[in-house]
Length: 299
Image: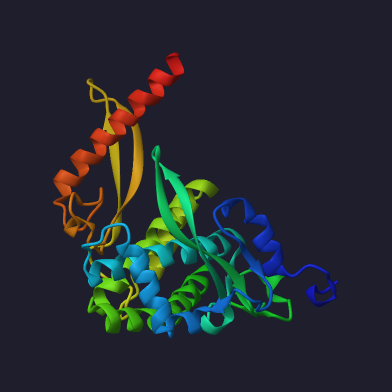
């Protein structure tokens, strides 16, 4: 039986499989409805962009336009990468990510992280097109599929889709905030690498995730490319120099500019930190985390 004769669509099936990852917002296929807008329309709406930047500024009234733009890009990337990378990594599917074929429904929410509750802006995502690309021959037989030659071409296809999707938003934020294109693209690349790393941990395929992410962000000539972004490993050792555990981190290539905010500081893997200081701080954080876990087990 060919896919064209079956009830379920490969993209919809993949969305259902990955559904547990999307507890903060919806990711689905469907059509345009009231309350939704396409990403293309959103990127081209100066008032909507200003409203998003004002939302970022509402947390710290003295933030400048460039910092607001950086934080807006990070917030949008959070939603976009979480809605797309699990499909690529786990299901071998790159949806149609053209801005006119992605629908958004913005909302504000509260999110707990490390024991603290933060106000966040999120968006439900709706794929308006059921077209997709895949490296899996079994899925490539579907009438809506474009069959690719392998994993490498799958990652390349995702990279090109990101470049096409985000080029419109980057242009809008450059015009509105004055933050440079390279700075904004670095934030997009950081989001790709960071989310792929998390998905790799969840799927227990960290090595493949690292390889795929680097294929996307390290393509010569791509706006995503920069030298600073990479993965690195740290091993925590006990007093006898015996290894306790090892962890993989993403070294950022971009900067969120949060250090410019009153009482702001540099992120744990900020590009502005010296590697030796960064590593020492991360190891200390890991040591405290292990101590808390150990204490919890003892009680």
